[in-house]
Structures are given as structure tokens and as C-alpha cells.
Image 1 (cartoon, rainbow, N blue to C red):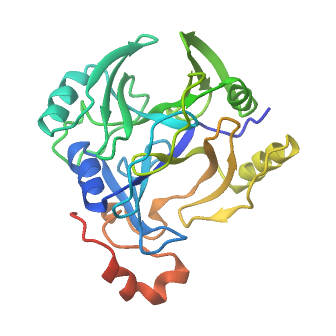
Image 2: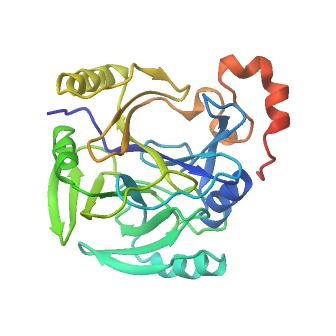
Length: 310
């Protein structure tokens, strides 16, 4: 069994409109844009990162806004809901705020004793806010969202799967423990890591497969402390039969990727070097940062990227 994984690192999704996406996360949800860069494989497309003050692993939601991309089709084989933690008692504030901002899909429920507020993102993304203990985390305070209600980081994620068995076995191999079963949803939790420590597997046999597009999660990333730990994880996964990519330098972390049995793309990302490697904390996300190979083409790239609010 793998022991190096420390919970979630980030979740990466796709969007149709960069400005709308940026506004939703920084103004409606009150998160901080901690990095403004471009897709490594498509430099005409932003890669936007939102999180807490410093982009702590376990707090960062990232997006590829492919302009005018058709919406994804919800179904099985995907991360159906990305869940954020908020302090206890914060949901009434968020229900009113999201309603005032015209957010759709608002519904309240309770799962395993936790109060949840579900809502849609601009492209039909599946989100939920979950009341949780702060566990030493603090929200970004640079907006009009009060600190006692602000988003702390991820709570976890819920997968929609036709058959959850093989993915559950994989999570167990990755260090997650089965914690509870409620109807067709099984919760897994990892001990000793960060506070973004839950994965729920919702099994819906016979449902249609998801189709990726705007509002779809592209991949979900799990955190390891450093490159040495990442290599240990990569070897363990390959020895078990998974087809894992070589290590890829993503400037702010190193990454490896593989496909989980249920169809979800997994990434293992390092906590090092972090988002302050090329910007000081006070100015994170302000300037456009480009991978080295694209720097000679900065002027052309900047002409094609749409403007974003601060």
C-alpha cells in the first residue's frame, strides 16, 4: 500500500469563458487567483489557478478556459462534484450570497452528518460547500466574503461511476480507508494528510457515460510532499499494472498521470516548489507567467488572450 499521498492537491476543470470563470471564483466565491499562466499544450488558452492566500495544496481549483467550448455531458466516469469546506454555520451566508449572484442549482442536504449546499458553476460544474472544522486552515480575506464564512480549501470530491469496486480498491492501495456507506455512496478518507481528505464514490449502474466539455473536471490531483515521494508512488503504481506517465515539470509542481479504472484521470502532484517560485506572495496571480519555452512568443500570446479583471 502507498503511504506517501497526503490528500488532494488540486482539481482541474474546463470552462467556456475565461473572464466569466475568473469573475465567478474571485468575486462570487471570494477565492484568490494565485496564478495566471497558459496551458502547456495550448498556449493560446489560459491556465487559471484559484485558492487560498498562497495556493496551499488542497485548496487550489484550476481551469482551462477553452473559448466557446460546448458544455460537457454529465454522467458516469467523472468527478461529478467538487466540494469546498467552509466554517461551521456558514451555509446561510452562502445560500443568500449565491442566490443574490444568480447562481443556479442551489439545494441543501446533509450527508454523513455534514451540512452541504450544492450549486452549479457557470458551465454547469457540480459544486458543494460543506460545513467543516477549520483544521488550522484560513480563507483568503482579500474580498468582501467575511473570514468566518470564507472557503477554506477542498473538503473532497464525489465521483460518479457505473461500478465503484475497482476505483475503491485503487483508493485503498493509495492509502484511503473506507469510512462509511450511505445508500449508493461510499466514503473514503485518508489519514495523516491535509484537510482535503475525502473521496466519495457514487455508484449508478446503467447510467450513461459522461462527455467532457465546459464544466467537466479534466483531472483530479493527489498531493505528495516532494519528488522522491512521487517516484515511490509512480513505481508502486507501475508495479501494480497502471500505465503512468513520466514525471512532467509543471513549473509550480511536478506531475504524473494515470487513468483510474472508473475512467477518471488521476494526477499525483508534488507540494514543491509552490506558486511563489516566480512571484512574491503579495502579487500572486497578478502577472501573466509563461512556461520558459513560450517566453519568446509572449507578445503574440498576450494579443490572443482575453483580458481578465484583477
